[in-house]
Image 1 (cartoon, rainbow, N blue to C red):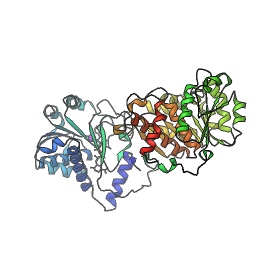
Image 2: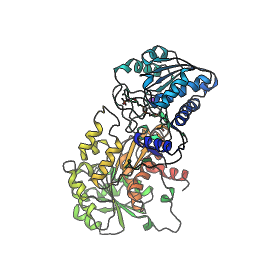
Image 3: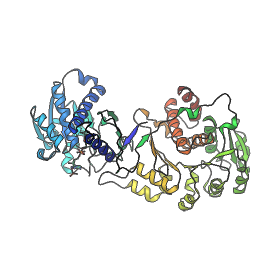
Image 4: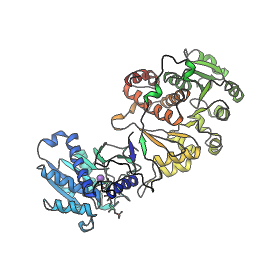
Length: 512
Ligand SMILES: NC(=O)C1=CN([C@@H]2O[C@H](COP(=O)(O)OP(=O)(O)OC[C@H]3O[C@@H](n4cnc5c(N)ncnc54)[C@H](OP(=O)(O)O)[C@@H]3O)[C@@H](O)[C@H]2O)[C@H](O)CC1
Ligand SMILES: [K+]
């Protein structure tokens, strides 16, 4: 399980490790600097072959301290290294100060204002200005250096950020202020921070171990760390002795004539992910249209709320999906029936089933229960949780900033069920605060997933897993992960119809 930490959690872990006597702060700083150099040579092997030039920008805290270690190690490697410091050396924290002195025995430290001219002729730029201690936006004093770093990017200079690019909030991934740096490579320590996978991050983040072995959970930390999705293949297995009813029966409600495509996509996805049976619930006017399009899927007429209530008396129907192509009016009538159905444990609400309650979200939340899963994209999220979306959208002036993790946790607590907030950084939270991120960034980037109907397929995947008896949180995370894997496996040219059809290949690759 890959944990992602906040700056406060990382500080608590570091503090606990130092207090336990396991390691000193100075040792951690040395390992951090060494990790950065190793990572640079792994990322750009040509830089390890001969000596080169480096410019190291150091800040006033321990991030700057790591920078002095990097400078010393590169110098010892035979490089030509120039170091620039923002701030007063006398005010550096003690470990950073020690490394400042160690560097000062080898070379000069110039003020940051002198850096731009050196930055025009470097092979490597090391951004060690600010890390997890970023408290506010960078002031105009940084403008020239920031402009020069843009020139470095344009010139193809290798740029590495120590921990995280300076000016980027480690908790939220948001840029604080206007002078946030960009780095091709970010080298974080012990664990990635939440900010490395939230937002539209550029570059690539990797983790270097700095020898902190124990997870010390501090009393001051109320939340367990967020993790990256980790799927359990065992929840997807079928045995030769299973009957189709052992894998549940999903009901996907469709909209009227001419609007049935989205529900059919969701239904196909539910079937492919392994629900034993999948039925489309359609109004009479759309029956012929749907009947002509389906084979393994079944069809039931669901005209209105009463019709749905009577269909749901069948206890074998254990998961219902409402939203894709449903239409707001039909959603307002059917959603209350579905969430209140006595024998139906699992409900997925997507698209129209969310938007239909934009005027009265509290009425919706009052009906929901722990078997429900909401799957909003950004727009739907803002309609249901306008105040939370407002906080998330606000331009931050200080760190740590309100993050998509904070927003999703707050939404799940308010709704009283699992909320899956879509994006390249899909965040999934349950009402207890458990939170997981499915990152489709870096090596898992899936740009072709942004296509019409892709969300309907995701809703169908979740519904299918719920029908199979997978618990809501795990169903949401497994579905989100498989959704990205299908897109990556198919590759360019992907359209939503391809996603369920790619699932057998993804399953085979998982060894199912
Ligand atoms: N956690 C670990 O295990 C290790 C972390 N290391 C490295 O240390 C940094 C975190 O160090 P820290 O000293 O806590 O924070 P920073 O270096 O990021 O920055 C703090 C100083 O910066 C000042 N600050 C903050 N924002 C601004 C700003 N916008 N403009 C100017 N100055 C700013 C802040 O001053 P204050 O006035 O706010 O108090 C501090 O002086 C972590 O990222 C790692 O790189 C270890 O070395 C290895 C182990
Ligand atoms: K940095």
